[in-house]
Image 1 (cartoon, rainbow, N blue to C red):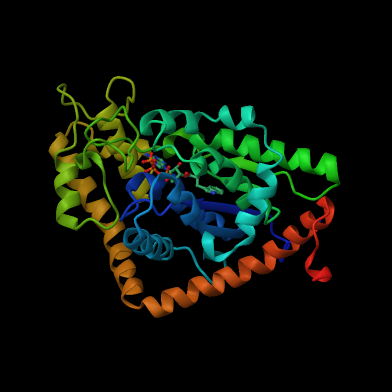
Image 2 (cartoon, protein in one colour):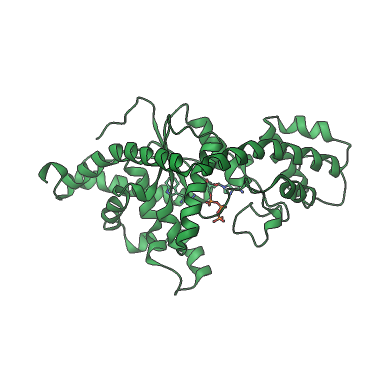
Length: 341
Ligand code: ATP
Ligand code: LTN
């Protein structure tokens, strides 16, 4: 098997550049985790633009969102010198390995992916692309190319990680030890953020209304307004009880996670006070978290040359790691390797 560059275990993750701004759910459920983990792992983070085109292509929007997503990763604390940060389409080995893995994936096996079933039902058969169907195979290629051990993802990606493991095991047993078998690294339930207007639904960029979505790049005035208008309940009591009081509990969770405090500590501070007080306090915490990230993102986007250079250098480092794995795969399955060319 090809060896990783450091003795730390390899960690790999990615997000699609499918919105102008990341939202609080992405920040709490993924990005803050990545920032912490990058010190303990040999971490690789990808802006998965090839996955993003499975649901349609708008070239200008895609270009802007790809750079903006990368800038937000860096602004939130991903260190592009320590970790590898790159754009998926800059590393052609992903698509090359995906083709091979696709030829080892059963049609029935891929048809069982619930994300595909959900999305294809929503899009209808004319808008459902073959790319959407093979999306999980490309994700498997992303992960396996780097001999990844840990993959931090949301619970919705669990089935894709299972498929990745199955494909790696299948390849290894048919053609000899080639891939490390990765593991999913699923955050605890309390890292989940709910929609401010419908606190029983997860905060998502595809929510029917923007009113419940806190976006990192929104102006502070906008986020404050959204927090102040968050849905609560009629009994007026501030306590953590996600079943009976989903709205208030969501506000308390967000407050605790963003301020780095214990939930009980925040709940005690606001016990006996009005919802308006809690919301005001939370709006300040959101502002204190997002404003520096927003400012740094704008600075990074102002110097596109430098940002592009950083991403190119990330892609060079990624290719150095991906190419030997692909070479080994080629050798194992009887394709010419670089040494033959
Ligand atoms: P969609 O609109 O398709 O549901 P999304 O906004 O939920 O997308 P994804 O691109 O699916 O975002 O997710 C990127 C990462 O952010 C994943 O690791 C996911 O688990 C995390 N994430 C997204 N929404 C939340 C949330 N509400 N709470 C916690 N983590 C979240
Ligand atoms: N499917 C993932 C994004 C993704 C990913 C990956 C995550 C694509 N390739 C590799 C981890 C590892 C999502 O939608 N969150």
